[in-house]
Image 1 (cartoon, rainbow, N blue to C red):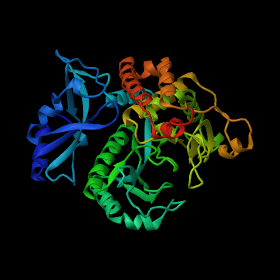
Image 2 (image 1 turned 180 degrees about the horizontal axis):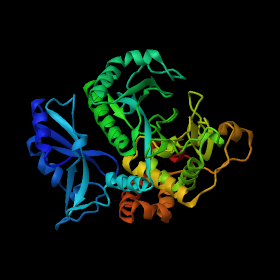
Image 3 (image 1 turned 30 degrees about the horizontal axis):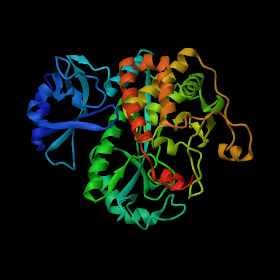
Image 4 (image 1 turned 30 degrees about the vertical axis):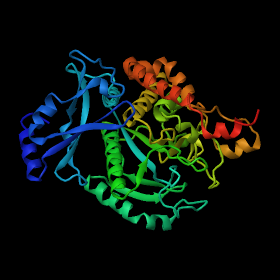
Amino acid sequence: MSSFEIPALVSSLEAQGIHSLLVQFADIHGIAKGKLVPVKLLQEWVEAGAGFAGPSIWGTGLPRMGARSEYYGRVQAETIRPLPFMPGVAHAVCDGYAGGEALATCSRQLLKRQIELLRERGLRLWVGIEPEFFLLRRGSDGRWQAADSDDGLSKPSYDLKAIYRQRDYLDDMRTTLTALGFELEQIDHEDANGQYEINYRFDEALAAADRFMLFKLAAHAVAEKHSLVFSCMPKPLAHAPGSGLHFHLSLTDEAGQPVMADASGALGLSATGHQFAAGLLHHADALAALCAPTVNSYKRLASSASVSGTTWSPVWKSIGDNNRTCLVRTVAGRIEWRLPDPSCNIYAALAGTLAAGLDGMDQGLPAVQACADDLYLRKASGASMPATLPRDLSAALDALAGNEVLTQRLGPAFVAQFLNCKQEEWDAFAAQVSDWELQRYASLF
C-alpha cells in the first residue's frame, strides 16, 4: 500500500467507528504480543512502526541500550481488519524491525525470506492449517480438566451431544471467524474429551500463518467470554490423544498450475512433490524442534495407548498414501505434514518446513519408499519399523543445533535465539520433581 492510500484507509476505518489499532507481532515462542495505538497515526505505524522495548520480548536478541534496543513493529496495512469482539478496534499484523533493518530474529520476517526464495523459482506455497484445541477449566482440586464435565465418552470423536452442550461457544466462534473473513469448512468434536477442531479454507503461506494467529486471538477472546479456556497445549490429558496442527501443503507455478501433484505418479505426487517430501523427512528431527517446540509436545508424539482406542500420533518418519500413521500423508496430490502441533510458532514452523522442502528439491532427493501398513499394527507384530522422531524436546534441540543446512537457511541469529530460549525451557522442566516421581520413588528404595 502506497503512502498516498493510507489517508483514505484511515478515513474508511474511522467511518466504521475504528479509533484504535491492536498492532500484533509474535515473539519467538509464537505468542501474540502488541499494544493499542491510535488509528489516525497509521502512516507512522506503517513507515516507522510502533515501538517496543526489545529485551522485553522473548527471543529478539536485542540489547538493553543503543539504537538497536528498540523493537519496531511495522504495520502491514493489508492485514488490517476490525475485531468483532473489540468494538472500535482493528487488528493489524506487524513485521519486526530494529535500527531501521528487518530483524533477523523476527519469525514473520523469517517466513517471508523463505517465501521470497520460493518466488525466485516461480513457485507459490499454499497451506491449509487444521487447528485442534481443547476447551478446559480448573476443577475444584485446581487441576485442569475438560470444561464440559459431561464430555466423558470413551470414544468421543464426532460427539454431537458435546457439540450441542458447547453450541454457544462454537456458534460464537462461527460468527466471529466469519466476520473476520474466514471461510469455514467444518467444526467437529475430536478424539479426546474436551477437544475440538475448526477447519477453514487454505491460503498462501504467509496469509495462512497470519490467519492462524488471528484464529487464536479470536478463540481466546471468545472462550473467555464463555468462561472457558482455549488451550493449544498439545496433550493436556495424559490418557487421551493430543492436538495436532497439520499442514496441508501444495505448490503452484506462476500460472496457478500445481507442480507437486501428478495423478500418474507414485502416491499422486510429481518428482518435485517427492523431493519436497523427502526434504521434510530428511530434516524431520531438526524440524521437530520448530514444529513440536514444548516439553509437552513429546507426550503427543509417542506411540502410547489411548482410552479412545485410537491414536494418530505421527511417530515414525515415513510417507504413505492416505496413511495417518505416517509422518507424511499424501492425499489428493498434496502433502499433509503431520508433525506440527498448535503450540508452535506458526511462522517459524512454516519457515522451517519450507526450508526443508526446498533443500529436498535442491538436492534432488530420491522418493522415499511408501509405507502401505498401519504402523501401529506393524509395531504390535514385532516387524521392523521406520526410524522414529526425537523422544523429547532436548533431543530435538540437539538435532536442530547440529543441522547446518536449516541453520543457514533460517539464519544463525534466529536459530541461536530459539535454541537458547528452548534450552532454558528444557532445563527448567528437568529441574522439576513431578507427582509421578514422588508416587513411584518416595518410599520405594
